Image (cartoon, rainbow, N blue to C red):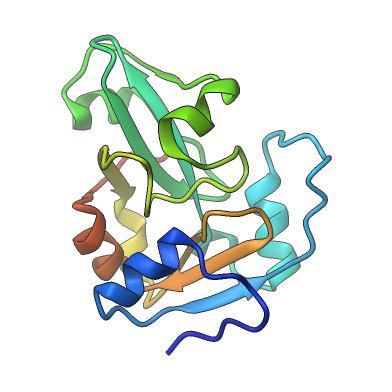
Length: 166
């Protein structure tokens, strides 16, 4: 079951609870003033003592047709744009501007979860997730991660597993 310590329940946790999906909650110190340059997910893995390949970052992108798509890839990797475009069936993809993250998802940059966004966007999880019993994603706030089986995460988000990292 979930271990919440003193963490306030997030929308992501409520969704998992309502779906009857077991998860774990891990917390770490996060200075919300730091710049979120690349490598933040790697630092999260390090702080939690987790294998970086099991910590998945959530990247929100916009297609040439203005569709918002969500991509979850392991901390050491980035979204491979060619693979992601092919998987999503779009001609172009570009990251959403940091200033737009909150209005589109309800989350802040660095605390974006594929669970509980304002709208359910098409979501893609890198197929490497299937190689682990549990993967870790943001709980929807900085400093809090959720450990959840990848298949369960895909089921509750409607995500598709695909080779999208590179």
